[in-house]
Length: 99
Image 1 (cartoon, one colour):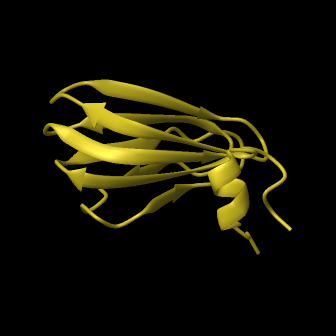
Image 2: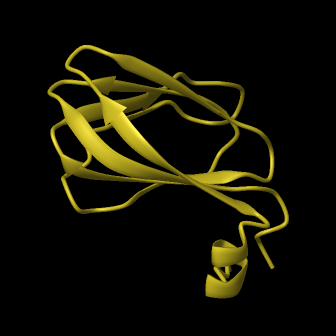
């Protein structure tokens, strides 16, 4: 079970929050190290999130809806491709968050 403490989020100890702004056709490569997780929320626009199949992890292809969070939990490289101009937020939780 993952626990997200508001205090550690505000203190910035294990979390990194940044804006996600992409123009149509632009690609962002998000690489997750073991133990890290990422959450993306799109407020406007459309994007596709994909990851190739690696070892025992299956490949994924997601089309997130605006306002709904997407959790990326498996280590690897994810491609985020803007199908339209995108505005959102990205939260990266560094290792040690799972208890």
